Image 1 (tube, rainbow, N blue to C red):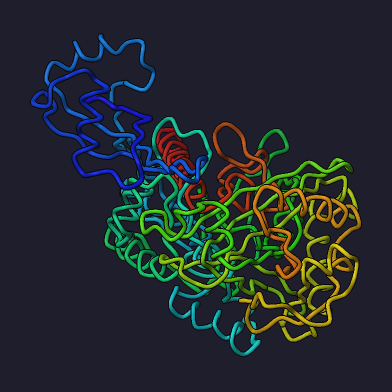
Image 2: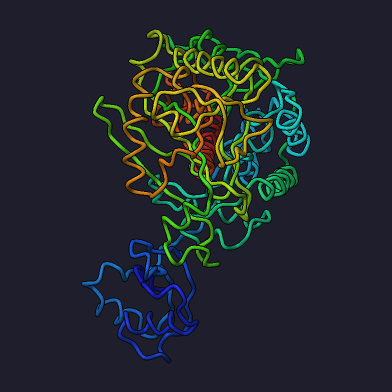
Length: 540
């Protein structure tokens, strides 16, 4: 099988144009093309008047070796790699492995451990996904926050209430991302996620998929325990000043003996981060980004990105990615862009307010939204303490809560007022999508001056790249503070904590992933590391 990339065809090409392009690229007759399939499909909209579809295809041809030799100088023609997944061999230990967290990372760590016959126990402080969804709607509709069941906590993790993007820029030489996508399709995701260059699922589809994957894990001998919060870690001193994990204390009063634990707790488990630090687990502060959400009518973005082709059914709602390096040394950029989506309340602590973005699979809501954020480093934190980034997040989220009226309404501001240094007293024609609601405010009072300075410089620059991006009636909603984990629970080459044997930090909360796909891939890698460690222990 040969893989051919960079096949470009008109947006409205005929069905037979693709096989014809394959034979032309390979220099073969039509009858020598035995079969073909699309591996990835994207579009090139750099020329808005002539948008192209771009394909990567796999083709079975007659005389493959000769064809490959003839195309030796064409880097876009190669052998199709093997993308199948084979788990490593394993020897079970005396104790079952435990996974803390049922988000994408914990989900795939649990799945791989179950497929290896290790019957993992999966703990999550939140509820099953449908009950969790009801609690989340309680915040959005009635301003009622459940601190243990919300956008951040519960089955599916924070990614359940997002755009459901399933692409990443991580290096993936083993094609573990393909394993993630294949499992999602088997769990009910549309098959198109395997071929789209920038696939997404959306919240409603993610709910049913998470349930299907849970059923598969349980059928393989895995065990879920929801509403089981880990309150402490039982460690014993090992040689060389390190520790060894011996078990977990749960909020129910139960002690769970465990010596191989995947820590996949997400980026908002602040109380657990504190416990880990207090127990001496090695933790470092890490950079993240802070800012607001920005909303425009999706029609503005479609027209700006696709020109006369806006609205074409094969293009869907347009996305964008923007970045600007400001004069003060800061970088302002768009983050987690949600075409045809909504801004959502994502708080997990009473008295604090934080936003996120979400889309359904259809991406057919009125507005486009994205995080509009500025990067910060530990040097910007209130102190050198490893958890100081969390302190900063809380400060900003408490300010936003107060500015919105202390009832989970969010503070919002017209872009024109923000650029002019004026507090908004009314909102313009861009209807805010955030629920329970938005109240006009002065967002410049919620962020450090260097963040506001970089944003005010970046907006006109972005407006030159995407017309109307800096339109006076575009809407900012505050605040966005949980772009990534503010800490890293550092691990070694064996994926275990630097100073706690048996503890495997994983995913976004530990600082090793960002988004659904990369978190799932990290879950697979960590599960394999657990299997290797258990096998070594079994023969020791």
